[in-house]
Amino acid sequence: MLAGLKLKQKKLRKNMTLNKTKQHVSVFLNELVSLLTVEKDGWYIDATLGSGGHTKEILNQGGRVVAFDWDFEAIARAEKQFASEISDKKLVLAHEPFSRLKEVIESLRSQGVPSVVQGVIFDFGTSTEQLMSEERGFSFRGDGVLDMRMDVRLAVMAKDIIAAVPVKQLAQLFRDFGGEIEAERIAKVIKSSPVPIETTKQLADLVISTKHKKARALHPATKVFQALRIAVNSELTEIQLALPQALTLLSSGSKLLCASFHEGEDRLAKHYFQIWEEQGKGTRLHKKPVMPSEEEVDLNPRARSAKLRGFIKK
Image (tube, rainbow, N blue to C red; front, side):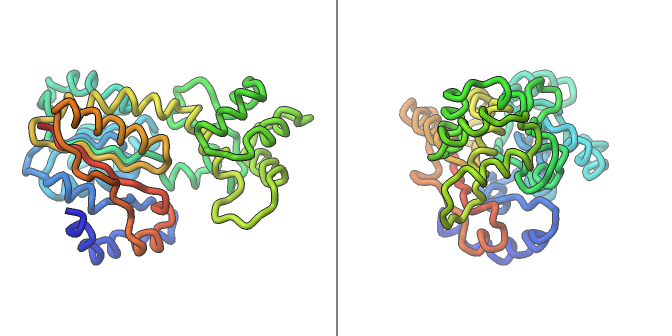
């Protein structure tokens, strides 16, 4: 199976030619959709709509999709991009977090969506559109409000966490969610700042000036920003709530696929898949995660930390 996934390079190159622009490129796009084995008129859940790459491929192969995203901008883009598919009832959009998968699917029964589906895809992490939008506050390369909310209906922004959380807890947050080895040093400098840290540039500059100078592949603020984003959106809790629901929504023989971009996400997918296999609920598609090819990483640097895991329900 892994060898088969490596044979997608020509199509991969075509799908990723826009990588140099501001348009989002879905990591593992071909692998995820190929593993699904889309059935004509079968229903699938794209739990992380984003820029619509996976949804588009499933629709192109004759499937029907319920696509979730708690980012209103993603939903608004999809309403325009997939207007005809929505009109033809091949696509249903849900402006909801994926922790509400089961509840939303049940509410859609009256619209012809079945209680079980033929596959579920999760593509965790941020989209290029989110990172390129300074006002969203996700990126250390811009200068916007330190927001980081995937869903603007959430009450707490990243700047609120920095202001309210004591130094020890802030350092723990940077360690647990970002793997930041200089967490305590950074947290102390943040909390001792004479002015409130409220913008992405303020925080990025502070982290850069605080960390020990050494050659590194990642931007110095990468792990701190990741940790705050995870905390603001309760991302790991969302995954913990969503994966068991996804399993219950799968028909027998259908697949649950997860593309992760940091250790916390991958650890949860690995944990659930192992437990379910031990409980006789199905089988892991891979004993070890699928990693992106060197070519994909060259064309799309976002793929460098990506891992793909899959589970097939008994």
